[in-house]
Amino acid sequence: MPTLTSFTIDLTAHETARLTAVLRALGTHWDPGDIYTGEAEAHRLLYSHLDSDQQATYQLLVAAGVLPDNPGW
Image (cartoon, rainbow, N blue to C red; front, side, top):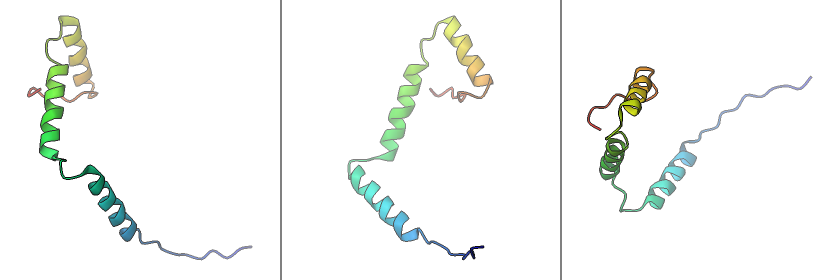
């Protein structure tokens, strides 16, 4: 029967390198606040001007927890 040997792996250095690569790929033009604002505007436009059937479906999805209830959209 084989003997099991325990070992640990520290992924801290790898995770730091990965995060650095991601941030470098995003570049200096990346602005999280601007992206959030754009996302909020996209959601607002998506759910605005719904007809009565669409609004009822939207409310069902909100009640079921599928969509967030965000009146700011």
